[in-house]
Length: 363
Ligand code: ABU
Image (tube, rainbow, N blue to C red):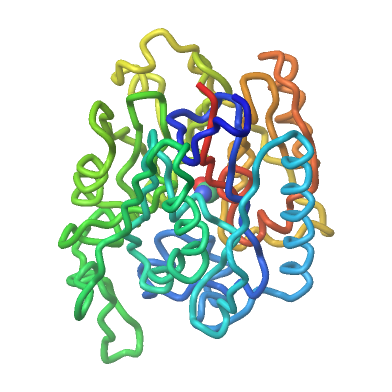
């Protein structure tokens, strides 16, 4: 695909050669602040106390994460990939989260870029503040480029209803209790909600999950937004802490899917026609003790190792310390891992998949 003829938005899988991408930025990242029941449902228990409004991540972690993202962006540019970066925003000041995790807020399906109708209030202005310049650039294009559709998320007017019936109620003894009476997720179904990272593209089929940030109305809304001919299907996972599908399944290349056996079964995957002829392989993960010099994983499980990014059907971005995974994909599938430091980005909530939005893949 010659650069002159390259569309501005065109991708419908996770493995075709990457040609254009958004890479996040870390400056001024803050712990997201949400209702206690949401933080309890989704975040590692030992870090709950950090999730307060306007509470910055430690400055040294943010600074190192920014260097890692800049280094990653430069590597992609050297590979001839067009890289866009979001605007620098003071997320601490505005009471937001970060610009480092664009995968959660934007998803390309064919020529359409879809904004997540976030469940989390603290993320509701993330796209407008961080990415609207990029969206304007893509939407205006030039006369020779194929048309781009941009679906902005609906505005929420007045009080959000998504936590109704779910907020903790204070009790006389100073403790609190859930009002949700055994409800599975931390949101209800009163309006569409999803994070785009709860979905992955497999050609005309998009596979997603319901989670603590994605509800059934969100799934229906996404189905209504994707271009004609695309179909969204839901995978039944077994993870009550579910939030984002990109440490649960990882398509390495067409026909090969690695999955997290703690969260999904092969039997469930096989129910989806798109995987009929695929090799489905459980990653035999042996969690290792993190060394003392590793920054804390404030928001993620060790399964973040599956949050890798295929540059094409041969090359895959892997965190430089994830040698067990790199050796496995090299030896078992003949992939070529490209290993660079990313642990400080991991500390902010994701890895290479989370930190990017692929805009163009050549298929
Ligand atoms: N989007 C990141 C998912 C992280 C995790 O499942 O632990």
